[in-house]
Length: 279
Image (cartoon, rainbow, N blue to C red):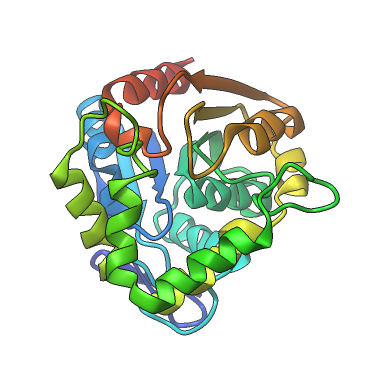
């Protein structure tokens, strides 16, 4: 049985998961991307708190302020950790919103553990159905891409975690992009708070997990939001395929938006999230 202390729950396998829980009303649970933390949702947490919602976000195991354990860095554990949090906080009628790897985590939780507790699901720039090129999904990325990420992380994580947000993550490598040094530094800060082992293993979790059956299992209304200039999770091999497998899914495409659009275009994303939640 999970136990709870101030701002931490302890899972059955002894991992302390850090979380924020602000406000009251219908709960919205935010699931962050790799290799970040719950802080990546600041713009959404403040916005929805101001709209009268209860906002909750956690640091995935090995990320942010959660325990830097050596194992369990896979989608099954991620989803089970969210289930433990949802049970401890007694979350019902909740909306789960996940970005990137967190989109996979939110989906896995809703599909595997969320019966009776979940109202809606939102996936933003999310990895499902699978990022890796397979026989079933020939449009995916080759394993060499993910091996390359592992090499860079192991060689110089600090530099790698500057290069990603400075370039493709937020589209700051595009001509005319309005580059924010603060956003880059905040990405680096969140990344370096976490564990190199969690981040290394997390690459396999986000790239090789096949979410096909999870997508088919979800009954609640689901919104899939994706930028068509996402250089991290290409839209054609993710969102456009995922929405076809959802029973009750809607795809919203954002022209020219990058992978990190929840930060760069928070005003637009927040308004569209609110509209979906209220519908």
